[in-house]
Length: 179
Image (cartoon, rainbow, N blue to C red; front, side, top):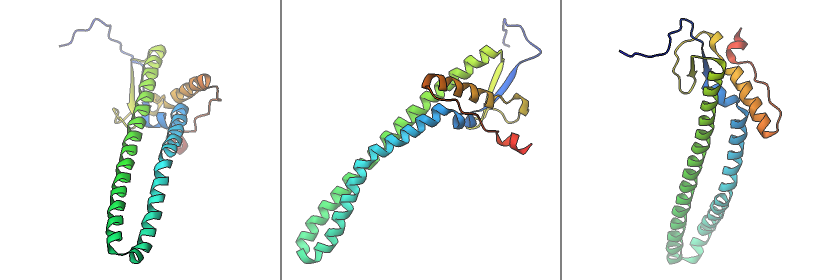
């Protein structure tokens, strides 16, 4: 079927990484995620202020409707409905923008991590490095093949060098805690 020129090896060097755990413990991902949350909050503040002003105006509308008569109430009610729709559209646009930016940020970090894993696998002489977690491609593997913690430590150490921060130690995984 498939003729390859590479020599077949009896002893493959193989390992796997829990990709969900890797992202959860990768300091750069944590830092960028926190920055994104702050940015999201800052971008949402003007809209929040508009919603509060709208709520106050709607409250005063209810109080003034009786005093100012039916015609005023109908006209003002229409204006309020239009403003409410406009605010809803602004909110949807902001949510969509944040979702796109968040996905782009996550994708760029995942792409970077995949390249890091590829380079690491080559450097360390692995024939295969599999992934578990969110994108599970392994249904079972011996724990001794798990290099997640090792890779997280290396990623965080390299990130600490480039960001000028101290590398953080990886806490024991759930499997190690059970032992």
